[in-house]
Picture (tube, helix red, strand yellow):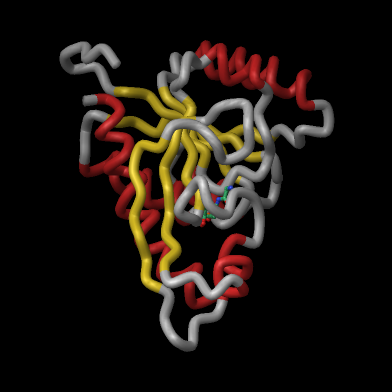
Length: 190
Ligand code: GAR
């Protein structure tokens, strides 16, 4: 990505729930002055992350995705208007269309709580434990039109412990997600 001196890289974060990754990216952008989280989009109006975004004076929008193509059109308008350069999906549980992703020219990235290409989709921690895996982890990747499938940017392994539960594992993996998402962002703009 082109670096223009002094100009911040403007980011939109898409969420559906708690928004701990969003919170972490906001914290990171406050320390690292190259990035600005300018917009938060949610498909759920009561997503907790929206409260945090509002508290930080970040513009928020909600699109319920009942009519995806209509909502994507509206989203594209606002993303262009706000001159968003990168979209970070952070616990966003809707699938974006091929067309929408194309408009962003590969600048949509996602975090997923597994060592992709293993365990795409939902309930990753339960499935990992049921299969007696030794390791799980998290992955930041570019988004393409297939679920959890684009080119991998960064991964972090997390060891499975003896008495692990999906909840315990989720908590340990989330900690690592918060480390690798900002790193991956820096990698793609360098
Ligand atoms: C995170 O664990 C993220 O990796 C996962 O949802 C959680 C959101 O947490 N994303 C996916 O499963 C996407 N396939 P957060 O709302 O606290 O950031």
